[in-house]
Image (tube, rainbow, N blue to C red; front, side, top):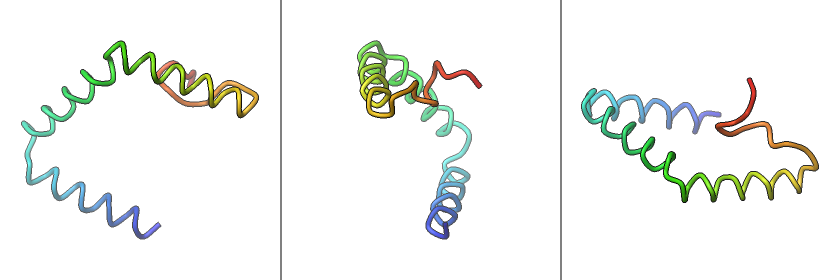
Length: 66
């Protein structure tokens, strides 16, 4: 738990130093990669395989119902 909090604190500080412009750039890049058809296909395959192992629908991912 302490490692997580330390990581979150470091991430916050680095993010604050980088500024809003850098944050927006990171978010745009993440969305571009996450929305790419090849990534979506690989994520679907991974979800299906994990679902087979779990014996039920995987409770996370973009299409999960909240």
